[in-house]
Image (cartoon, rainbow, N blue to C red; front, side, top):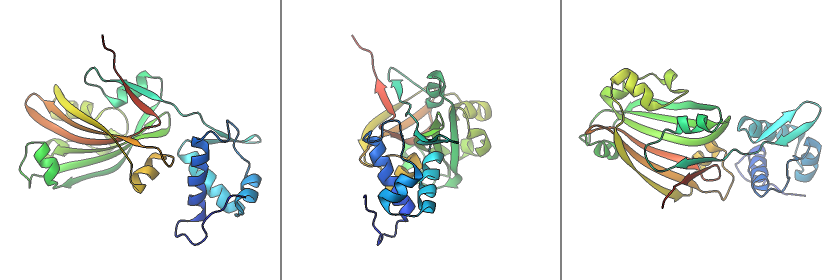
Length: 239
């Protein structure tokens, strides 16, 4: 029997989700996922707790229920991104045969001194913050936080950012095209919110990508992307 912490403020269903994700990441189940009855017995929890945990795993694309057949673990899709030059995550996803989409979590006018400095603007400059949860093949892949100069960001609409590239929308509405920029990539341990949004198993790290995008000599975006380390890798060809 596997034990859950009844004294924890974290609901039992959420603890069950975390434990199941850990077991899935260690390939403990293979392709077969335990039945509700098995989990009720193994974890000594109610059927409602099990159903809520499985529902969450379904919503994050980890498990698929099939009527009359039970539940199955969906194989995770892994993406590779060449680093020879500029790339678009949306384009990379579709080119590798996966459905691409985004959920806009924030679209608001802000003042953020650090982001303003990255954009070469005064500390008190008005910016637009766009936070998007990016999906590949129906599964969460990355969490993007983009800061744009206010005069650019306010031309955009959150409803137009649920598919495709942010840069395509900037080109369409602000008549500015990305011509260059630079990135810094590092590994990190995500915080609890990010881990939950990405559906990331425990002990899995993320890649943090910091990007400054330029249109000519004008900085038009400062972005911090947090990408699942278990689903995304960079590649390079060299001689």
